[in-house]
Image (cartoon, rainbow, N blue to C red; front, side, top):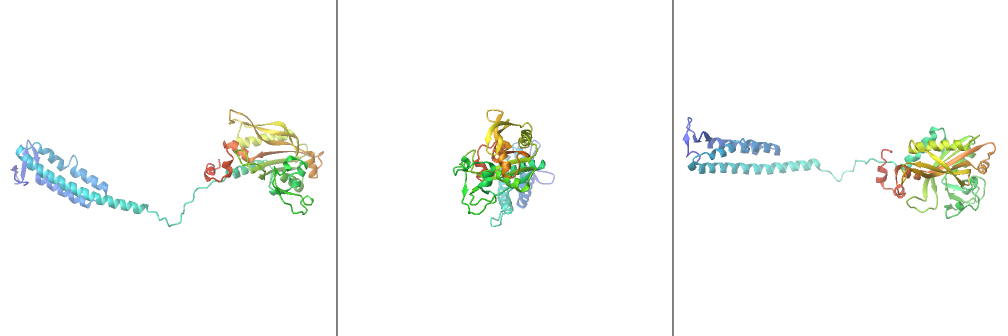
Length: 371
């Protein structure tokens, strides 16, 4: 069928001629056959795309032959159309079949490469983060260590003498009631201070460590006590029955409120950055006289910059010095305490105490770099 129309050229091959546009049935058939053979040997979708462009694209022999049909005499167009239709169909079937095979092979290879053996033990370890409370406690300790102070930590189960009596809490002080303090049954033996049957309590402040250190280390003494304390508070957004404190004590000759204020201002800057400062408001604490509430200048306070309560402080009560065997006429001292949780809440704009105690790892992950 291919050679029954047109004329013979110089090589006796049948060619259709129409206004200098050649339709060479034998040549285009050879090109398509070559393309089909290469398609069957292709091993990737990218290679198949390149072959389709080469043998069926805009510059291919099939496209040029199809364009030449329009210039043929009317009695030759039908036969030429049949030739091109068959060639395109053959090429398309070969391409589609090989494409399906190649895609299936590539998909299997990809699945094999991405296969995960779920029975194998997990080797990856997520990046952990220390709890910000522990990190802040270390920051506070580093501050006092840099000034040459010592760090102390005493028992969490304490005698009433160390927790209350030595700190000038009278027998009827409200803090000594069971509504405020966790009591532990005593063993009726002599305690460290020589009292028989002194009740044991969960320490309500780390001040008991200060008395212990005054007795064991003597003076002069510059001491910071950080640790966990216990009070019968309900857990809410700003309170917890278990929390952490830092209490500081300095006992030496000729210490004044001016020395206390200087240390407080330096601590504020260390915790909250340049621009932080403190002020003192008269108050009352059994273990200090005079006593003051310590306020912190807080630029990020809700409603605008302002003062916010941070802790308590004052000059050590002479009765506390006497409890440690010191002469208050020779020695003086100052003491102050701040809540670690409160400092953390203020410093990082945390609004709920629950976040600190519920153990959700996503909370600690915010502090993975120790910020």
